[in-house]
Length: 469
Image (cartoon, rainbow, N blue to C red; front, side, top):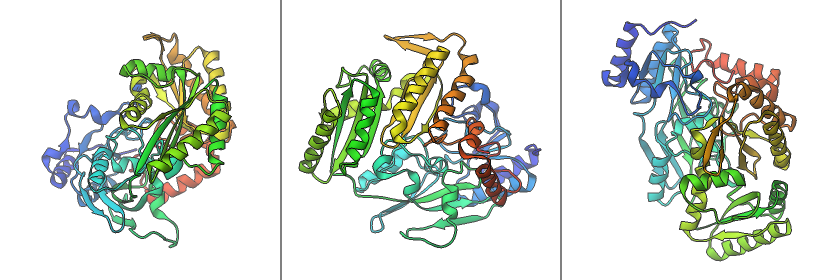
């Protein structure tokens, strides 16, 4: 189907990117063979990895691959969870690790323009120095700008500020024929035909390579509180969310957690969650222009929570207490990662969260698996971990027959989400491992439309083949 990467092509890649930026040694390509998805079943080594230094070099590399019909897989920070950057057809892997310049911070237009390889960590640090704020926080700060655009990443702050798509104003991309295109810009409004820029957001490198982007910024919040609210049941916790929103309160984040993941993360970090009671918890982050406004807002939310059956309301005002809470929440994944098969990110209407989690519990019990579940309560994005071992009181025990149970369990969990009119992915993307569910959630007609768009942009199917569709 595809041509092999021959010595002539490797020589040409070295001429384009420099010999030191072309990797052919097997042992130096281990990191390029996988992302954060845990099972090694999908690992695949590229024939060659190339680290271009500019959009012009990317253009020449793409032209070569298109001409010789060699598959090309773009790669950002490798923090994905569904095999999106795994070179399943081998060929050429394009790593953006040498394209990490912040090109401009424009305070007058509240924008930042940067190359695709800039990490979120570096982006946040540069903006903090300038007193500016990029609200989306998808999680792993080693993720790159190109990668979070390619997956339309979200994170906890999406309930108030939106996902990556809401902040991308312009994109520089190299198309499959090698042409370099600029989509969008610093302007606010645009009603100029089809929005080609938005096709690239969430396209996972299947339509072309995002080489840079311009993002919209905001002034940072002046005051932030974190509330932890325990409940006797998840249903009580979830019913509080619309009560808060219907009172014209829009928190920065509303997360729901159950007791087991909290206890696991506490044990992993040797830190203490402020609320020892309750089987379900809400973690609510609020911001405001002043401390007085924030205090009034926290009191109002506390009253609503107690009216909805909360056991108590804990307010973390100082940064050290907030950090402890956020660390415990954010490190749940790290605490589980070694013993996890897959983390799902099904999205359902937020009023259906409790019903979905109840279905997950039934699946867990029926198959004898452990499926710890938590997520973003105000946007319905739920993270169910499919585990190969179970944690109890500081001890991990392998689940008997987990490999045979894995596929039926993930099928049933996805079906539970589909029946509730949900989405297969809220923020992680489809990549390689979720393709089988896309048509069930979207329907064959929409899948055919996606195939038509792919064909229009990439008729030779060289761009990240085997992903999404």
